[in-house]
Length: 176
Image (cartoon, rainbow, N blue to C red):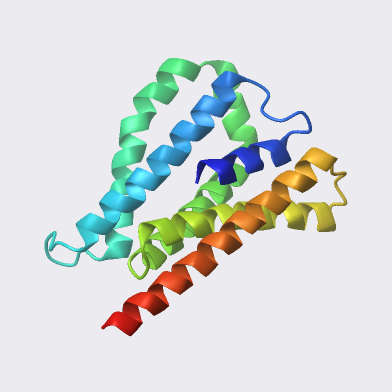
């Protein structure tokens, strides 16, 4: 997955990654996303109690994650006038963004209950490439040669993964 993320990094900025801190936090986020997928898949395979399906597991993890991060957000941003004023002016956009992000991840959990975590991670990477390409077409954003090569390598990587997985799935089915 690292080559795919490096190409996405190149496509997002004309000069590549702007800083080591940004790159490091992006890679940390990708690692956390992958671990969440693997551990959630493991949790889905064990009985966790009554009525704990994929959607409910995601809801519980989201609530716990929100409660865990609130103290860090308050510590880093504070609750000063500027923060409260910015939230009051944009609360509808903040709520709408939160709802759409939640629904996007809920669909991801429902998909995770049906596919392997690596397949889901590659699909998520492909989604990012599609968003970049769609923004180029719809918004007519200019693209640098590095960004074009990065998008092409990202798409080719996803294609190679899909073809390799299909090949090994056929071999496994034939051996049974």
